[in-house]
Length: 247
Length: 214
Image (cartoon, rainbow over all chains, first blue to last red; front, side):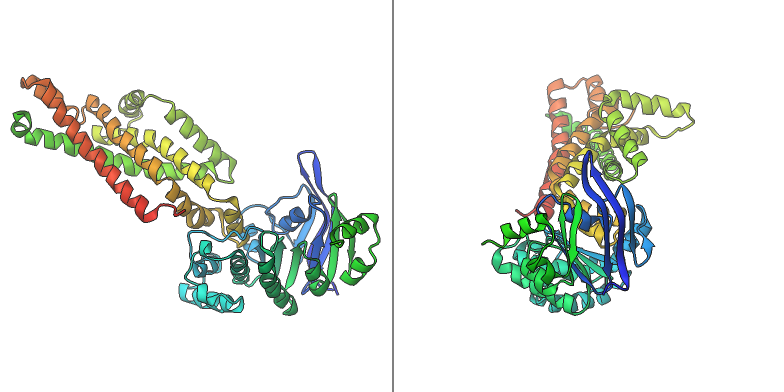
């Protein structure tokens, strides 16, 4: 795989003050690939995920999307962000809008679709994530898992080239994690390009093409899941896996 | 008692003057206040600096001084307007600084994640602010904006000293006509109560209709 690179990071560095959170990151994500990023807290995996659509600016290095370098602030950046969907840990649905309006808003504002077209597309997507019956409710009336599925539908509504998931299940009850992971599995099977920061090792094993293990702001290992989980090369990864797989 | 019935048209004109100053001043203050709040959270540094300077200067200037600056200052630059318009400008600009800060505190109540989500969908700063942030910020700032506009209504009394017809200024005429000071002021106070209680009522309705459900 990875013959047709969609997302490319080269020599990316980022500092928070003196803290060097991303250190010379090189990462390529091919079209249709599912890359899972794992690692201990504070390893920079969420930051890495957020740099890909420039919610976090970087200090040096280059990030290209389908061969185009990321533009600085402004309209061209907004246009590019529309091509890369993002799903957040805390869902971040628009609290004052109904589920349907959440999914339709950016279609109308950014894609310039008519309200009816947008709503039709939103209903299709809500149907796909199993929430059509809740279209007229407000986010606060839904469970966490339902809210996260709406957030996925909202990101899909822009017909993105790739989806970024920043710990999408970390704020969910165990029961609700599966309903979200199922939707993500389905997207992976359909060939969506995905970068997923997660602690769900089961998902990494079953859905990922590659696992990227990060520690202390560096990419320590970048391998196919089976190899990584059965025979990690670095001590850091062995240590991490022994801690999380013990229970 | 008969101070009111004898001078109904004088009181009426004064009340109308105060209502006009309040309504136009409030509209100007709301428009400028929301605009300046947007400036203060904008990604462009020069806009943020302008918003901060606007608030700092206007919020810390005594209103009477501001009236002098507008009424005496602007004509020097060739800006000659009716006194009532000058008064609306002074009141509106002064109050906009307070509205701006109330709106900005409202903006801070909207979780940053929602703004990030909007930006990650490709929405511009203006779209994010206009469709996601401000509609929610507005809900939480209804009560403080109500208080600020009530203060504006009462501050409009200063305009009376600058040749603008308004409610408090009627006491001068009534005094010259020989009416007792107590009842003159009682009826003036009633006039202000009508204006301020109306504002309260409007904001109570707004809060019931739009307030944040918790």
